[in-house]
Image (cartoon, rainbow over all chains, first blue to last red; front, side, top):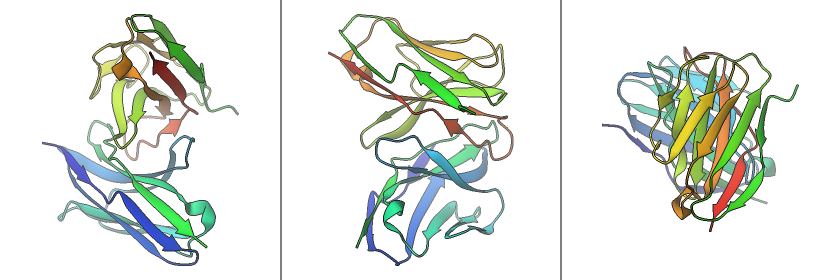
Length: 109
Length: 114
């Protein structure tokens, strides 16, 4: 079957580092994407991992371990504008994405 | 460059009424999608069209129909709206379903069914 788990909420102060974990069970797994969505807005693509290891994009990094069916998104040097929901989305070999319920990141001053 | 445009942005319907949500993309993408988002539920795929001329059911297709009118346009129709269809609907497109399959989303259509 298909399953997807990520924490519902994470709170951190400006300048801190936050790690959002994602565990998945996806038939025909191909890769793991991450999307960001601000309140009232549309989801936007952040990163994608097809291979094991770390991908870095500015302050954000994403990691994948295919053998553990696990990934994480690392947000560094947190800013107030990073307050948003973050979704991990495993992609299967047919290109379909499975979105979880998302993790709400709350950044406090 | 508008990206993905959805209309209408807001709609209130009575139970049993029908309506069509319109979606158009100007990025020459091959694949298009309709998702719904409910509080605490994340995004659930309703229907998708991997390429012009094809449509397939997603996770929650019941109560909906779609039409891929041409490469640019992908509409979602509710034939007889129900309160359970109150949601935010997002249209998305991607260049192809291969590889990362990066989705570009529209701004969303907020539908309330009374």
